[in-house]
Length: 271
Ligand code: DGL
Image 1: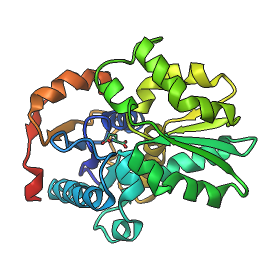
Image 2 (image 1 turned 45 degrees about the horizontal axis):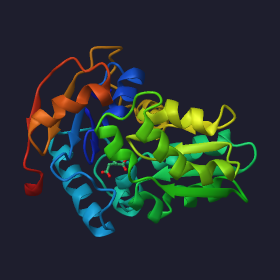
Image 3 (image 1 turned 180 degrees about the horizontal axis):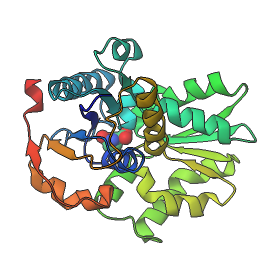
Image 4 (image 1 turned 90 degrees about the horizontal axis):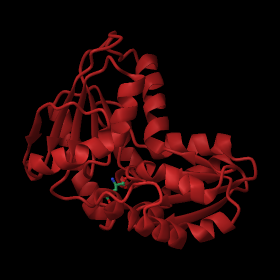
């Protein structure tokens, strides 16, 4: 039993979609969330910069005495080296492994779509894991850079005309390739799930990496004897690297049930 918090981080506030899922499956766990709102986006940056940012994010969370680290960010999960992750003083998970496993279970025809930021798609992270899990899998991967600003600017309503147009631009080729499973490989995309689902059709299973990683995290904590032992009452502390005002503007979008609570600004470049 271990009452230390779980550390969750993301390039910004999109990772709150994963916090929401974690709170659903682990209501008795404390969580420390760090959103690098001063340096978002990561997804259009080069590998070295993303790794350097991830190292600082992790050092900050370790300074908060966390017992488990979760990179909620698709871009970090695809870029942070696994050998380095294995040497961290506490267990670490990204979101790629759990999502790839779920997609491997879900596909019937062996054709899987992957969408994410430019860095995520360039890394080939999902494709590499899927190839190990599904022999002969066909992968249709597509970077969808406009989805992040669309979500952050509130274009998430059902039938939003701008988002509808962009979905058609990005996903037509993926849909026409006949995938039966699509990994929503970026923190923001679950907010477009309904619209993407309608576009892709009922026969296509959509995988939300934050959701499946939260479920695997709950199992991992139990296996490692790291659960808090509480059935409810977990609290979340929020940290950001830009002014907290931006947090309060976007939190409801990503977190849903957020009911207030301290949001503190930290100087991430000092970690
Ligand atoms: N959090 C990022 C991801 O999941 C999206 C935003 C960004 O580009 O930093 O890939």
